[in-house]
Amino acid sequence: MNQSNSRPAEKYSLDLCKFIMAFAVIAIHTDPLADCSNTAMSRIGYLFLSMAVPFFFLTSGYLLAKKMQYPFSGLENLSKIRRYMTKILKMYLIWTLLYLPMALWHLVATGKTLHRAILLYIQGFFFVGQQYNSWPLWYLLSTFYTLGVLYLLLKRKAPPTALLLVSGISAVISFTIDALIASPDHFLTTMQALLPVIHHTVQHGRIFTGGIYLPLGMLLAYRKIPALLNRILLPAGCIASFLIHVSVIDSCLLIIISVSFFGIVENFSLKEHRIYHFMRQSSMILYLLHMYIWSIYYKLQYKHKDHGIDDFLFTAILTFVLSALFILLKSRRLKLKSEPFKKVSPN
Image (cartoon, rainbow, N blue to C red; front, top):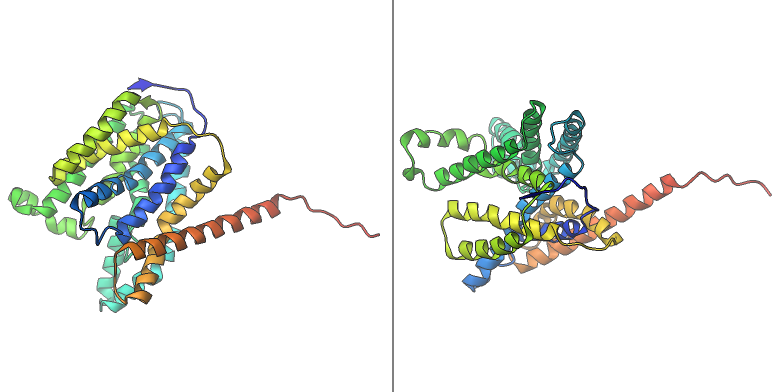
């Protein structure tokens, strides 16, 4: 990796790709390829979609690090991490509250007792990062926990290599949990004994995903992978992932693919245009809001959870329209606030 301490201009390529990846997240949940009979096409499609959330984590880490001074452990840097943690926590609390009616409806509809419903909600809030059909919220909780770990390490003047350690440990924990859940018989009895604990807490290894990618994004802000290497690793990783169908290997290859893809996008320069500012704002709204739109659509249209191209198109289009309206109204309100008060003098 080549170190670079200069702070470049805004990366509009990241705004563009985040916008695209927001629609990829919508596709992950609505599954437009559900009726696709071409196995190869489905595999390629799902491979691309699997990079969406890692790209969000990498971008978050990268943009945070660009506001900091390398090697990250200064007091001003710690203050910036605290402010970002506060922002993420506020978002998590607000969106959890917005999704509360849906969670309550589901708990009542499934006949959960009050005691069981409270336990499930607490588990979802603190350990999983989601309730019924509020799956995107785990990204916020994973980011918050990851930032907390990084803050504690950097407060103790840990070197930047500690970020790699956090990423590696998070990967091992996440992959181990997922493998243990999928094939418990392949593990020792002592490891199998952890299954009830996992079931009643994190449920799967997803909450550790932020710990894998966010530190890597921070490092990529100042230590670049050579462009040629990225262009080699991306197709090589995709081909290997296409041919190999072992979950742990797939997960490892996803890291390589996501990081190399991010490096290619980050290295791509785009001229400034206001459309990228719009994309920057709308990508997170698309990411967080679409589950509500999809849930309402399939309940009204099918009376049960449904996946397919119509689910994707309706959800994507309506969520985009709502996000655009929200951004437009917000910008107009800010514009009105910024205009000086004009006194009307009598004639």
